[in-house]
Length: 428
Image 1 (tube, one colour):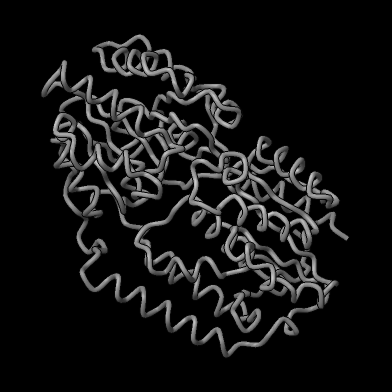
Image 2: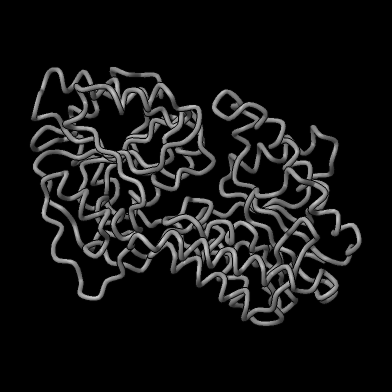
């Protein structure tokens, strides 16, 4: 990037202070915040409020970012993560000894994060407005937050010298409205119109999303700005070396919020059939992620189906190192989603040497085409056969998928930002 001034939008990160673990979008926000605030030249944080945007200096913005990251306890080793240790016990596997002095989440932790959030919001309200930004500043917004409130961005009309850059993660609420909350498709269309109205440039996480964004913006009657595709990097914790478990039977992972588009229902019905046939020898299915929206049928199975209680495990709040250790220990990642914007778990699994069975959708082909096996998300018998084949001792399918990963090099944040910096350096 050039040494021109940069203002990074911290609004979403501040709201995430109340959460114990990050989502995929949170990780993107955090990576961009560190990149934007760590560069040469003038750097600022910006927070949109009901009273207009507020600008904070680099030091205060960096302190906010550090507080968010500390609240997520992302630097704790797997053995020091109590969520990981409880999961290990559930899988009848030894997690090792917790490192002395490793941070732990006590009962006071949620209240501490909320207090920091309230104090941060109060201090931010006292900060200066957008007049504090130098001429020609790059304004970088990397989440969808508040874009459905276009009035929050009207200040950009008064600062035509700024160069707004928006990261658009997906068009799923528009292309697949059946998987979202009522009215979400309309809200997301509004988000895209806000971005299209102001953007000097747009960044997306996949070529599939980029093509969809361009078509949608053009159909809305806007001029399509430059669009840069940058595959998301992964955290250093994901790799073949590091702690791992030794479960007493095969373990299959599903990663992501529990919601209909992730197609958990197919796997839960599959596991019910396996449990009825195999009993205590049924492989584990570990669902990594929080319970989401419009998921009543899935939750009913999780809460009330006795057949799967011995083999299906939910885990929420797992640290990055805990998830990485789990991936190194598992049999395969299952990603039967109907639609995705990127599919980060596919990339993380590939980096960890974990075989992947994924739904045959364009973005999975884009990020995992060299190593994953692809199945139609409605092909129940196909998914069952794959699980059974991977669970067999000396599985040839597992050996084949592991072999495909031997030369896989996952995308990196360094490579991502090199593409972004080249695009932004070319902006007038």
